[in-house]
Length: 210
Image (tube, rainbow, N blue to C red; front, top):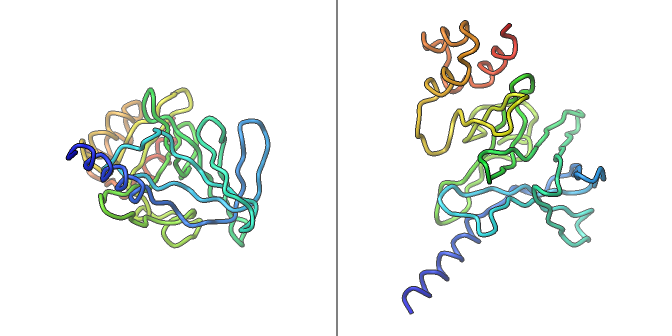
């Protein structure tokens, strides 16, 4: 009986913790080539709990009078948000391990692309970690709006973690190993000219490296 109660409580906690961003007007581009325009709600995952179905689903509805429809990594190519100034915030599903994909915002693109996402580390209630454009709902990038950063080269299938919600390795160590083919950048990292808050600058400098 105690085991059954524990399982029920865990399931309830998962449903509560798996919070989501607010509804935002945007475009949902599907792998079929179709583009859906309407309101989109992105998932906020919890790193404290395991997602029951293992997939981060995007919610879509044409307008508030329509029923919500869920789409996952097997259906979505990208999510696009456009603000009043026609600036774009782009989200994509990114392979983070052999069997796992996550929904990330594209921060900087090039031969190496920087991705970022926000995650919740609470086991009680969802934590708001920024909107579709970041914490202030703007397109402008801000390090503090995100809790995890991954990077992936053009020829790679799986993105590598640079900064994670649970620290398992220092940013300096990860960056020096990953960007080892750019001696100039490695030297700057070794001299502590860059910190984790400079992750975007680091990736941009790497993309300029010959």
